[in-house]
Image 1 (spheres, one colour):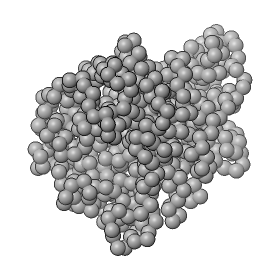
Image 2 (cartoon, rainbow, N blue to C red; image 1 turned 90 degrees about the vertical axis):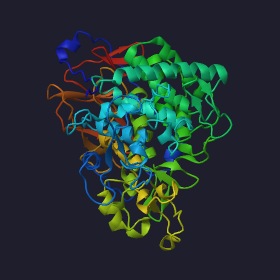
Image 3 (tube, helix red, strand yellow; image 1 turned 120 degrees about the horizontal axis):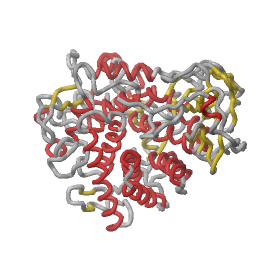
Image 4 (cartoon, one colour; image 1 turned 180 degrees about the vertical axis):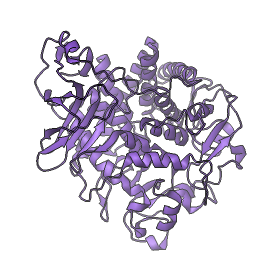
Length: 579
């Protein structure tokens, strides 16, 4: 498993390369109106240990010998539909009656759950290619649908399982998003057999599809696309133009990996299509990646995509494609939902969508620090309020299952699918209750148990929070890792976003826990464009004014900074794309 490459060279080496000083003007922060509706931090603030939850959930769910009701949650799938290798499945939701080793030949499991688990765990530092004798990265490659000639990663391993639910070949985001997950995983396991040819095939198929879609329609307004026959499908109902951001994510990742200009041009055309939209196309989970791709491509390629528009479309809840889809604000009977992502019209936040929002937004700050305060403020709310997806943080009278039953099964690690303003099943004890931890599982198929409201599908993405979020010495001030979820960034320095939601300035300890040489660093803030500390050790403090953000780049002690062609560099490595 490979991690981001951090370059920390000695000051004497850097000194010869440096001449000019950076642009001294601070980066003006851009407010996002929906985020401004949120408090600077939750009133009843409590931060779960997201990194520990990631580790414990991974150990719990990937235990083939777990005992108890509905356990184990994992099984071997030996159907070998696409590749001659053993695979595995995870339950989408606890007790889903369509799934398991004895149901539907063991074939019904979903990539968004399985690859979400591998992606989250990997980002948080767990090696899924060598765990308890299993190479789960290799085993998961059976989602690559070669038998159907689609030759991309789909949400199921084949059409039989796909017909049982999960949007297989019938819902654009379900066909695009698994490839985004695979690219994030594959970028971190280049040495695993089979990863590279699958990534290359995905890139080729997406490149062809991009050309066909734009030649046929001129935009991504569709619900379906047939990757086998390269043919546009349903263009009338439930169209999902934000899939263009998913295309850009995959294709730009392919360009960074392979250097093929065709992939760059296809990524550009997908983003140009999305940039031309005049109304929010947010459908499920892909829209926020337009923020990341716009910020990154503007920085690295000199494009001028409208990052602010994409940020507003992500948060506002005014989607044309799926009315109400965005980010919640407010509270339900004391349960704050500020920052939870889902349906603002149903007042229903979802765990997966909230976790994945951080995957898209926090890395964007490396490329456009004008959104540091907005994203930092959102994250303080989301990091604390996402605890309400978990039964141990919700009073018994505010959850759809018996709390003891939910805790016995979940161990406080498997979340409810979401948190909603009210019950949806007509439970008498929940009448008039505002704020309910709940899930959709019982409505998916007749006979699904109430426990299917506990969602592995969403919970397995928690590693994104586990990788990005760390507490500091000051309550409510988080250290947000801007490189943890970045896709193939190339050589870079450790970069952390800090936002101070307090009403007074704070002395914040900057900890450096990456495997880096040396024990002294200079701390450079790309928001103020100043060196905040020289010859600092891990744990030294910086002063952060109230309601402000800093994006701290950890540099070698003694490094001089060079400003060249509108960018700031340290030893040839860009640390500020705008200064």
